[in-house]
Amino acid sequence: AQSVTQLGSHVSVSEGALVLLRCNYSSSVPPYLFWYVQYPNQGLQLLLKYTSAATLVKGINGFEAEFKKSETSFHLTKPSAHMSDAAEYFCAVSDYVGAGTASKLTFGTGTRLQVTL
Amino acid sequence: GAVVSQHPSRVICKSGTSVKIECRSLDFQATTMFWYRQFPKQSLMLMATSNEGSKATYEQGVEKDKFLINHASLTLSTLTVTSAHPEDSSFYICSARGAAQETQYFGPGTRLLVL
Image (cartoon, rainbow over all chains, first blue to last red):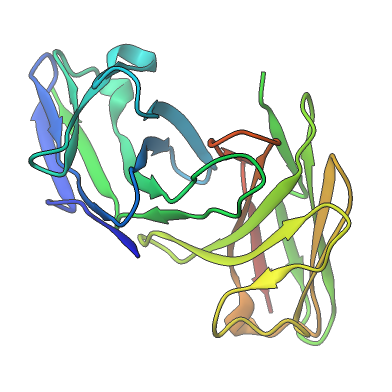
């Protein structure tokens, strides 16, 4: 069984400020973790993923996330927010264990990021 | 790479009619495709998982006779909402995953409005 908790359904930051979106997970197998971004009326775009390699993962648009097993966390950060970062962000965990196996993504409830001037 | 398209992007239909939504992987072979439903300001709810050439596996509470899924090729899956009713109005999103891949790539979504 797996689950994802995203603390804070709504986060507001000023343009140029640090962005920190929190994600904690629970998984019965070594997790694969993902952050997706969704702009209004659009599908989900992959920001970055952790697949048991380096614990600090760099993604697109200047985002990065660090996998911390001891804290069961995978928080998303960006040093300096831009107005275009305003969107909904979803953290997800997969129970993927290898080729040929069925696996699903379990999503968090999402965090809406607002960027103000 | 890893582009997934959906068609149509938006559809309005009358109650009682059926609507078909297509999901295509444009630059990779999708051995598995997923269909999600998303209500306003909520997360994605997995409806079903389909593997190419096999019957779809539906999540608990999803009516398989109402939401017909076909995954006849490695690049195309379809979701047909049969006898649609206003409560079926929602944002439907598909995703696709290739063989030996752990990542799902999402389509842009289809907004269905049933009048």
